[in-house]
Image 1 (cartoon, protein in one colour):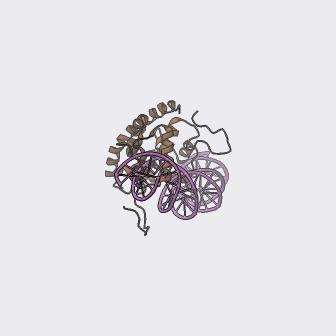
Image 2 (tube, protein in one colour):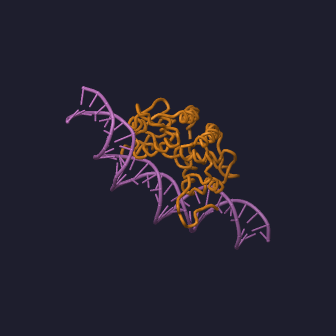
Image 3 (spheres, helix red, strand yellow):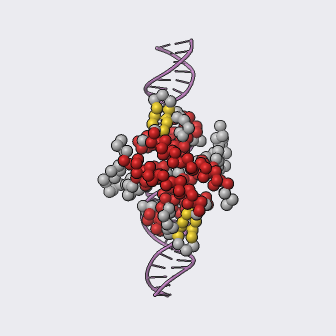
Length: 113
Length: 113
DNA sequence: CAGCATGCTACATTATTTGTAGCAAGCCGC
DNA sequence: GCGGCTTGCTACAAATAATGTAGCATGCTG
């Protein structure tokens, strides 16, 4: 199977050897704080520090890393006058998550287990 | 309360100090392979090894960890006769992601940057 | 200029993930 | 009941990613 035989040059996309867009996206969103960042930016733009505060004071290192990735992906942008915000594309993506909120509420109630 | 560690010496829930369901969910889904697992289980149940194959041969350690978490969350279950599958709740959650597929396709095309 | 906020980086400490090997239990044909 | 197979799952060292704290350079405002 397509495994690195012995010369570990460099991995490909990370999280996906297939490169199928959905896999790439799933992996990107599956990194720590990615979903949370998109979520927190949902209502308004935030400065990097305000975002950090919104994200339970996550370390600036990861936040900055995620922000770079999300910017590169075109979901987030740095508005020169007012911190980070979602792009049109990012907003589209974010809307995808809206049902998640309702789901989470329902889910937490069923948490009898 | 689902999770609220009473000892202040150590970390709290991980990913959320608030314990708001959506934050807990966002954190759970934001762990590596969580989203992917739910995605791969979308069409059919898979044995742990088939799932591993579907997930680019991710290490069984994480897969097993994620599987436990997702089972505890009530999204996934181990069908004695046929491997892992989504629960009704898990299927509900998974349906939330369906628009993501279309989005990913569109996104990959706009990947001019 | 001082005072403050911003985006971002350094870096040592921890935590998580990876990769590989392997276990015990169940099933099948023999 | 013994190989030969598959299953779910675990061990564990090495690699990678995240955390927490400090701090830099820049751009304000007064």
